[in-house]
Figure 1: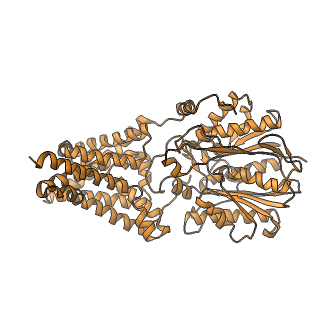
Figure 2 (figure 1 turned 135 degrees about the vertical axis):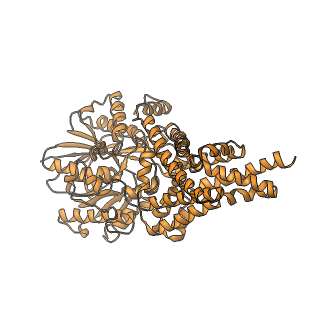
Figure 3 (figure 1 turned 180 degrees about the vertical axis):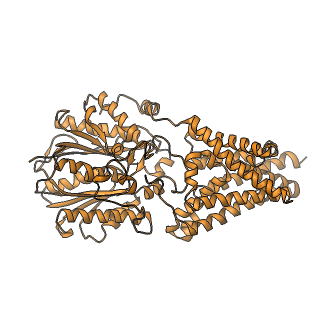
Length: 337
Length: 120
Length: 150
């Protein structure tokens, strides 16, 4: 059983293991710097389906199938699945796993959903309530644009601090045995709202939440600032990462040299014209399930802190003039032999 | 010559729109609303028709010109039919534009589907 | 976490260090793209007038054709690319109005032909018609009061 280290942080003493992982990415992500790490890259944004929403569900469904295959387990061996996405009522997840018959928790944490799923999935294993859980998320550029911004063919100019929703799905199989990367610490975020009202400026909205969670993680665990090889935020983008760096420095958390961001890594932002970088539930999910876990399993990275960031607004709340509540969940993953 | 005048007038009207977008973060829908209302106001005051005289399509093609058309129709109908004209004039004068937008919009929607923006 | 800034200070600070739009470049591009679209309109108008068409009909037909081009270019997935370069230069002309009607109609076709295409068609363009018509009626009433009663 785990140990509570503070208000937000738990140490998982049984070290739940990430036994298998898989990722599917869209064409643009496949052409990005991390393209070769993804299990599959789809060229057709409809993925052979009739609508973008159906395509996103299929992304999640196929990713789940890949995870089960790589983990050499069947759906019946999974006690719980924690899944979420950006669409209203989380339909990508619900329809994606409709036929799987796995007990299901649908999550909404906006782009932080992967962190939320990892925390809950690993706690289920740590608590002994499950042998294996699956944590999985998806997002799709086209369905997200439709829901949060404008129709695809509508001619609008994206402002320079805007971000590009990642098309893809990534997930992991967490179990109680094995040699894979282990989940050692989890820090649950609390909502931080610094009054940003511009829905195009999600980096600025989420940076204080990331800073808050990272600060809580280091304070409550007492870990040294060089404990991790990399502290990687979910989708702050270039602008948000700059802000987060400065906020952390002001808080006296000296990790500036190892701070990275999935959103800035997934695209070549200049050449691919993605402005401040990637965003979306799949952003941290496919960087984790594609790149980070690969590096961990090859021991090129030993310890990482993944900090999934999310902006919890809706188009209605923005139209009503509300500011953007943000959250960040941190998961410390380590290679322990 | 009329083409250069159209280019300059049309270009400048669009520049005003661009300044509004970049400085105020207004959404495109709001910009269009502002322009069409501005067209109605400038039209009813008789200012915009002078610009149309000089700039030709440069003044009529931007959406602000649609506002001017509405105002022009209202003036004509009020003079002919009195107060009732305030209600009949705008839509009558703008009828071709509105009907064309609905008709071509519908037809194009039937035969096409959206594609993701740049994939690279 | 202790916040060293008030919310207002935070928002001001992040806006100050945010990446900036190339305002001058955007203005030049809007001028060129908007100018070209209007010039095309003028070419059509001049050609129609040469055929002997009366001025009002020529102007209406020009608007109709420009709306057709805007709708067509949206349907073949090109207009959004023009807009990304031209910004307001592509949004302000009536071709941009057509784009704002066709793009949601295409996008929501999967939700059906009545509640999808039919209803969502006016997602962006609806307000333009609402405010245009309301403004014109108010203007008409004022025009009646100030000129006709005399």
